Image 1 (spheres, one colour):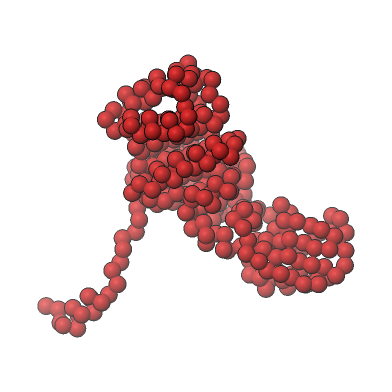
Image 2 (cartoon, one colour):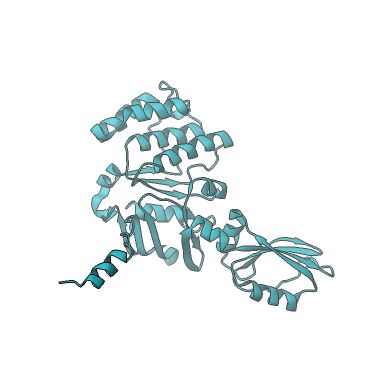
Length: 322
C-alpha cells in the first residue's frame, strides 16, 4: 500500500507524453551501384503529423533514398519501416496508405484528366474522395477533358498531387515536386500540401532543393551530406545552428588567395576587402582562425538565413567556397 507521501509525489510527477510514432524510420540505410556508394549509413525519421524536408545538394542521393524507402529499389544495407511495416514485403499494397509524386511526373498519356481520376478511384474504392479531387481539380484549373499528354509541367504536378490527396493516404512522399514550376503554380502546390498536412496524424516527406519551399511548409529537415553523417532536426533549430559573419579587412585580399577555415565554415561571398562567411562551429574558433590568417579590420556576426544555413550544413569540405 502506498503512503500519503508516495501518492502525493506521484500526483506531482510530470506526465510523460508517449513519443510520436514514426511514419518512416530508416536505420543504416545504404545503396551502392557496383563499387560506388550513392547513399551510406543514413538514419532517417519522419514522425507522424510532421512535414519533413529531405535536403541535400544535387547528386547526393535523395531520389535513390526515396526509392529505397518506398521499396522501389532494394537497399544494399540497412532497414526501412513505412507505417510500421517493411515496404519490400508489402509491394504494391504499400501505396494503399502512401501517396507518391515522382519527379518524373508520369501519367497515362492518352487518358483524359477525368478518365485518369476514374481509374484511380476504382483502384482505391471507397476510400477515394471524389469530392476532394473535384475541389482540387477546379482550384488547380485542370480541365476534365484535357488529355494528359497535353498538360504542362505545372498541370501534371498539380494533377498528381490532387490524385494522391484524394486517395487519402496516411503518408505523402514527394520527390522534387516543385522543380521547374513557376511561382504561381508552386504556391498552389504548396498550399495543397499544407492543407493535407494539417489533418491529424498525416505525414509528408518532401525531397527538394527549393529552400524557399522548405521554410514555408516544413517543420523538420534532414540534410544529406557527402562523406559525413546526415543532420536532422527542427527547421528553426537547423537554421539557428549557423551564423553569418561579415569580415572586413584592412588590406586587399588577392584574387584566388586561400583562406584557411575550420570545419563547418563556408565562404559565401568574396570581395577584395571583405568576406561573407557562414559557420556552424564555435564563433571563437572561426574568429581565431581568421585573426591568424587575415589582416582583420572587424568581424560582424549576424543571424543566417535558411538558405545560408543549408549552404553551410550541406558542405562536405573544410573551408569550401559556395
